[in-house]
Image (cartoon, helix red, strand yellow):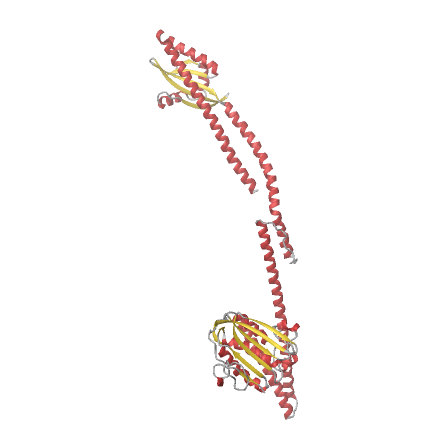
Length: 505
């Protein structure tokens, strides 16, 4: 419809301009021809008068009128001759006809005001159609005579009416053809848009695999491509939301399950202490169970608080000394390794990491604690760190020779409350949240890790953390004090700022 409105407006304006321009040109031509004719009659009047002037004014005027009558009949124009007193000398009937349509006195005044040798003209509508009336003046002897010449110009008005009528018919035909073409073009242009709308409706109805198959390289093709990309992303986000909802549901179920066992033990032994007479040894056993299960709940609450706080707090990184991290880890892990006769080794090449010291300590401690739970008494655990990747990253390798992790379990060990060996993990106080904490800490630091494990042989974890600064100089590596060879760095406080420390049976 807008195309039709624009076509109609443009055609009407252009057509009216063309018609008006053509009519003005024809009217100008008629006026020029009428001017030439009136000048010709004026010439005949003056020449005729001059040829008979020697015989007197009356004879001269009659000769001039005869000359004009002869030429008027030949040109089919009406002529009238008047003097200043409005006395008619030629064309009385023509004067009566013209006087009914035009003010002769007004034209005479206009002629006198226009200057010498000028003529005035006027278009009137008479019984025979439009006429062009022209008036000129000539001084013949002592009298001023006015010559009126009428010329019928109805033909140009008839031509204009015919042209307007033909143009209207042409415009209607043009609009009809244009309407059909515009409708077909609109249908052709909007067909892919309608198809895209149908695909959108199908997707809204649940058919998430539907996509637009429009592949042309035009604007609609770009729209269809953007629509398909948007649909893919929406589906991905929906799947992510579903997976997140499923993880939250699994998290809630696992959390409830983890609470159930210690709470059942605490309630059962508390009721036993309250309602039964127990021997001192039985009472101590019950109290011990209540205490250990309470500690397990306490550890579970601490882990959950760490997870929640890391989700909400703003992370701000700062330079962290790798040697200081190794020193703190050594101080924490040495008693545990000595008690279980584990041969442990921590070696951290000096560098400045970028991150949060407490979170990095929690990351490495959780991994070393998991390694300690995985190895048997007398096993081996090592942690080594050094600059990698052209001194842009810091790599940490943690290895043990423990039980290992089944290959099918590796992808799930970072899920909250997931434990490979549930009975042993609960026995050692685990809740299945340590690896979830480690994954979140790595995400906050922009780091990454790889876990390799062989069942029955042990596990290797490769961690990559961003560096703040890595020194170029080499650090001396003195020999260990326990007879084992290796470089020293980040030993315990009694060993100095750097070095290697091993604990073994």
